[in-house]
Image 1 (cartoon, rainbow, N blue to C red):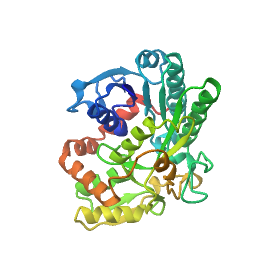
Image 2 (cartoon, one colour):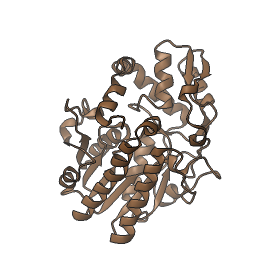
Image 3 (cartoon, helix red, strand yellow):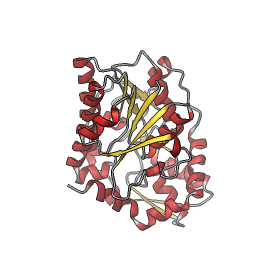
Image 4 (cartoon, rainbow, N blue to C red):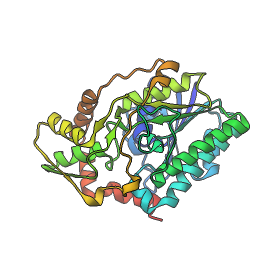
Length: 336
């Protein structure tokens, strides 16, 4: 593993993974979605930007993916549309990005004989837990258009493994959180409401449980899976094997931020009844069996670092207040 391509490198997990690869001495290409402002996302002000080869393109365009894959031995494919609420109103955009984009990565990797291809899945593909902890044999259930497109992309990746002997590994993270996470996610939503002085916190469903993994632990999981020679053609979960309800999570955040809050369920933020994933709890034994991965953060230490980042990056809070983030998202992908 020497010459690395990270798709979705300007995003939350992708930017952390890109910077970590630079720290480890790899040659890194960062594939970032084209935009009229030539903005590099979270790599825009990275202290490592002079050590990264940034390539602007579109994961939906095969030619640009083919070109950026030349000379690469390892691909981390993270580019995707991930917002579940937006997938209800714009499912076609998710098909084009998540399925066709993954096809482009697989086909380009096949053409260039890439040696190691990590496709990012999601714990949302499991749907509500049918048993816990959830291991890699758990059935997949598309409870949202987002989850359905990720399931399709997963099957497409394995079809290339079986049909063409393409060296594919499927990485399935559970609920990653931390600095730079999308403002739409639960933890940034709560933190930014509290930092804005709100004592009444409005959320969707309060009772689902999630297995939360700090972003630095998630990217170490990616890197460990990349190094493993035993995980080609396999799904591997990354998670903590611990769960917390939304209510308990919000109360813990309020405690860490030294404030008293009231939690309200806002009906407009609740998913459709059959679409809500009620419980996720990761079985990470496969990851631990085949790699040297071990978590460095528990829920409290990870949340403390996350809160501190938001407190020190008030410009990000101003962007959320102005609605710029949502406007930018819709300009890029529309509401088809």
